[in-house]
Length: 480
Ligand code: AMP
Ligand code: ZN
Image (tube, rainbow, N blue to C red; front, side, top):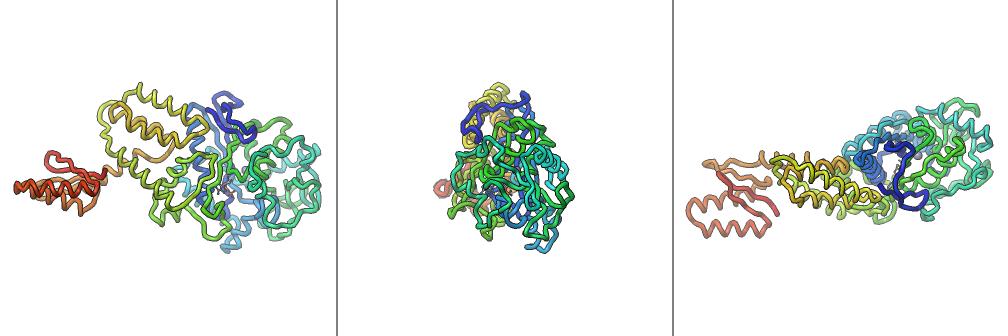
């Protein structure tokens, strides 16, 4: 597989520390509110990446954190803990908020066919790991105490900005929001590893540490959790592009200083989902969630299909019109799959050939729009329906669009709607009584040998894009 690497700014062949095995880490959600569909764009693309790696033959260990402490309102360690803010907003405890929004996140994931990573670890469960790392960083002179907090000293690094091809706006995210400068810092980019002093004395969760009772900074959790479950050599680290700085930059700084060797050579960043007014954000009042899509009558998988149509490194603009277009295309695709009969044996040689091509095409920097094109190619394969279904099923193990299940549901619905009319005439259609009535009228006309009238009705339906096929004992109609 070839993958763009944000650390080298190049597309290169994907490699792993242990051949055939991938240690993969994903920054998980901050569980102070619902995930918006922008967050979920990142998780969808990371899910496809994981599934593609498995499809291409890798064995994958994927780890994800749940941020339930330490993520302050500014990514640059300033302001109040987001969890505390969430708890106050909803008159609940921080733990209640964390549980509620963690469950909500995995509910959204389930609806979007996002697989649960092999390891999911809330940040509050690994405090000893962070203390171990921070202690060593203090001992080795990479960290210092000031004003009660422990800071990482970025001046001890040869290179700090490793992702410097991101645009200014993304880099500025951590220093926006007009918070005062922290005068304890020796260098502008130094960041907090452990807080004991905060302007917000009501910080709910605190732990004892060699530096006093306090709580971890946001960045240390990902280093600690990753090292615990992925080991000292991580192959692939993922997140949304806004995480590149300062979060991932700081993760690298502290992990490599702690380990004394390179930590993760490959970084995968998903570009943002934007609205027509700019970046999607939870602080802008009402925001777009999976539940909102459902309330408006969309199948959440329509949103997954919409995301897959675009490349993960391109910013994607969300509008209802764009989603409607995706919905139309997705439904049409399902309808075509529903039309496959599945009779006969799948041709294994053809299946293998299609799989090979899929790996090559999608393996070119996770080209998911090409993967969607591959579905249409499968429908046109010079093979029987059973083979086409086998190819689609195989591709869908990566894309997770529930293609076969949804197509089967369409077929079942149609069968249930097939109405047995007077004298056993069966109409099988798409569940539109007005169309069924016309088809029946045509049958009555033919029975009365009024062929001109029967033809007129057929033409009328054709003008509405409806094709009728006469079958023994009835008729089948479908929209073209
Ligand atoms: P958070 O819950 O804020 O920690 O963010 C969860 C994930 O969503 C992170 O990987 C972010 O980088 C990513 N993310 C945040 N905003 C967007 C967006 N508008 N589009 C895509 N990904 C995003
Ligand atoms: Zn992280």
